[in-house]
Length: 251
Picture 1 (cartoon, one colour):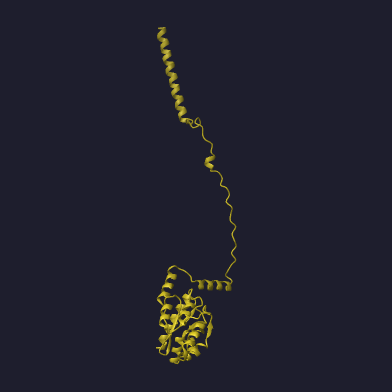
Picture 2 (cartoon, rainbow, N blue to C red; picture 1 turned 30 degrees about the vertical axis):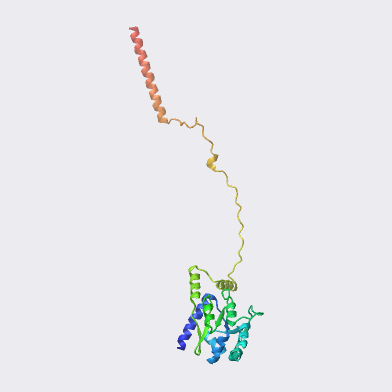
């Protein structure tokens, strides 16, 4: 059972690493309900969570969560002591504290830029977290920590990126950084724009117009010979006619 749980965790972690840029140390935001469940089930969060996520982790909470645990009195005193051991992340409710669930929800706004994991037993908070893409959700079942499978919103977001062939912004930054480290980035030289010269006149429009007198072509050599022969015959015929007429007159 433990091996199967580790396989699911590894698969889910790979999904968030590849598609949303999660890297070590993993930042886990915990609320009072998760700390109370860990205390009840005797779970050592600081020791067990890094092994389950297969990487270094930073356990953290917010002032609003601590204020909420303090206001709930003795019943959650043990959970308060556990939460006080974690790093405190600054939220936007310094002057006006809000409930732990509202505070953690606000920490993941804008696409979860700090790559927080949310550890909670609050079902209402978990439902709201699942409606946002790229936020891993941790909870406790009996005496084990479980990383929830990617939400439908996260799967749809990844599918949309693959369909549109978009590269996530964090991957672009990583690629650019790797290129700089390997010395593959070359300085881009601005190309000089060639000035467009005025186009010359159309050569066909520069041709001289032919005169009407020049359009008649001269007869070929064969036609000339034929014309000469015809005129020659006419002269001979005319001469013969004149000669015969003169002989008749003499007679």
